Length: 361
Image 1: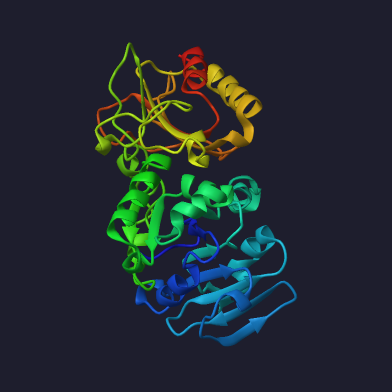
Image 2 (image 1 turned 180 degrees about the horizontal axis):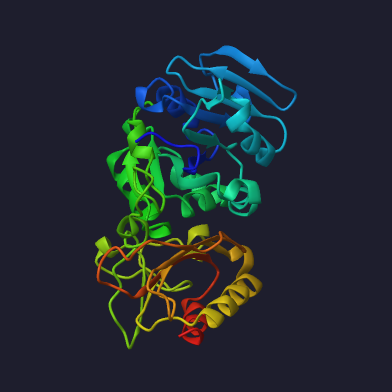
């Protein structure tokens, strides 16, 4: 549907380790009609072999018009300033020329600072919304990369969608093993195999809280994709993908066939369901406690909360120690009024999360 001036602009963050195929993917994407009216923000044109013609240039950015009709912008200065100025800088006759933003990071980049910018910059919070994090993983070298580079592991852990690139070059057994490993690291991220960067643009959008039309939340996909946890005395929890048929072993446990030195043994996805409504004061204290105690090891948090005395649900989203301002939705999506929380953590025992959550109920 057409975006109005008051509709937050969806942002897709494209990340992935060096050589994982972001360049090839972008080259294919920008030629698709579905990428019309998209502002693509990249780091250096020298790293991206995009066919383009110069559209305009400033001291901070270079902008090109691509054949599909989207724009491409190279960041040389502050990302927040570029995003703040983009609607009027890239406008004609008072009308914004883009309805979507794709930000491509460098291969060694930690995605958290960009997410923090979107979450905390006052002039961006109402203007943009995170639509999703897409991470490319080299199917041939992905396992070795995850073994040796914590940056790649974190990129995979916080993703909403994982793209296994160069899938045609990897042995089927290795490809299957990589897919299983990524499902353990991040059970809620859908996986797609990609050959020579070919994937429809629509597969990389509509990954955030709001659905594809940007007007209605899709909580089932945003939260429930991680697990449908069983009830346990009012506090339910699960780790790992529900489709796997079993829970992941707790951190530090011995699992047959698992390398005890793998970096991702330290990363876990935990899902909790809270039956009782949460008191607002306790909820605020919980936020402070979480940020103080767990900081950067709390890689990502998603939650829908039933706050006592409120008829409508409240959604929270955090990355490390930074939380997006809580959002109250118009209505619950169904008759289930329980609070649901998803944590992707590093070196945080499940028991620590349980003890904090019990304190707010």
